[in-house]
Image (cartoon, rainbow, N blue to C red; front, side):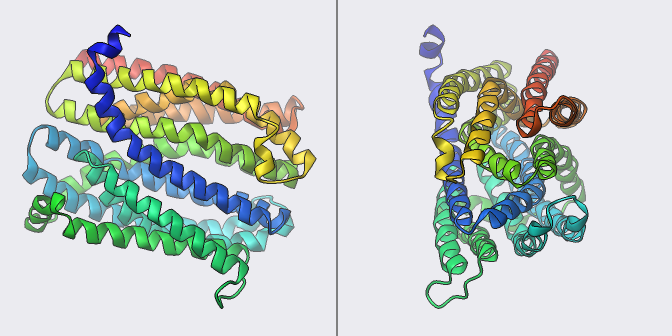
Amino acid sequence: MKYLELNSSEYKKTLRLSIPVIIAQAGQITVGLIDNIMIGKLGTTPFAAASFTNTLFNLVLIFGLGYSFALTPLVGKSWGEKDHKTIGSWIKNGLMANAFMGVILVLVLLIMYFMIPFMGQPESVLQPSKDYLMILTISVFPMMVFYGYKQFAEGVGDTKTAMKIMLWANIINTIGNYIFMYGKLGAPEMGLQGAGVGTLISRIFMAVAFIVLFYKKEQYELFVKLYNQSSFCWKRFMKVVKLGVPLGGQTVMEACAFGLCAIMMGWVGEIGMAAHQIAITLSTLGFMIYQGLGAGTTIRVSHYKGQNDKEGIVRATKTAIMIMIIYSTFSVLLYWGARNILPLMFTQDPTVIQLAAQMLIVCGLFQLVDGVQIVIAGTLRGLADARIPAVITFISYFMLSIPFSYMSAFVWGYGAVGIWFGFPLGLFVCACLFQLRYKSILKKI
């Protein structure tokens, strides 16, 4: 309580930055839940195909999101130094770096499209998965444009604009899904492909909306002027790329652990795939809070870094962790207490419900360490530290978590739920090593 009283302003600033991010992610999660419920009504095969396709696609999109994070600490440091002219240059070169990566990610997804038949999935899900993935691939480029503007805005402490755009996009996505999935208002009935069309329309809206607001909002008038005065700078372009690639790798490696587990679920069967999709969707209820706090921490830390304020960096990190502990406790109680009820939102199949409930028990076990590692990762990102955290993430997930999941499921005989056993191990090791890295950097400041 004494810490709370002494640092109440830090709590307010952290929450003011984090809450819009959390609300935006809550909106995305809500529309994700609605998507899954709507797709689930199409049948088990479309639901399994969506689970598999989203796993592949989200790995690429999450890398793009992590890559775009590079712009926030660079802009945030300049903001803390009150070097506004440099911010204009970061915007221009950061957007160009994002567009460059958008093209690369589209090419990666096209390769995945042709590799789907060789990934060991049930024959029934192959063609629906390919058709769905092709539509989602088109949405990557506008999404990367949106991410570029979003991360610039967060760097100068504006998290509300992206929140508003994302909430409107979620509404557009839901309406688009309803129209094209079920053939309403004269549109063709496209089933699972209709869900892809709804997503594509919403992501084009997100990019266009932020571009318009960037040039129209009075809040951005100075930055538009500085952006127009700036020119391409190879050094800054490459700095974004060099910082963004390990950040993207760090972000995607954790997601990749979940993604590879989804592929392993395909080796178990459609029941395991469906239960995994339910559990992984529900697990985002905790993740959205932690990720929002991580984003707020990145912004606060980058500003303090620009001011060369070591105590501020420590204060911002500690504040976010304390908020996170409170929410993680709530998450554990929810997953354990309602584990047999929550899956009913997606399916009435008793076998799927029972298996999803077992996965939610495991999900509750790693809430605390997941929150800690996300917040400290946010601090390290604010300090523009990416390479060592990427190595730590690789060790935690690829050398420990994924092998442990495989052994639990296929060697030790725990089946589909055993695939989830690797998550607590990987997250715990990652949280510990991130903490050591954080303390090492503090000593050098």
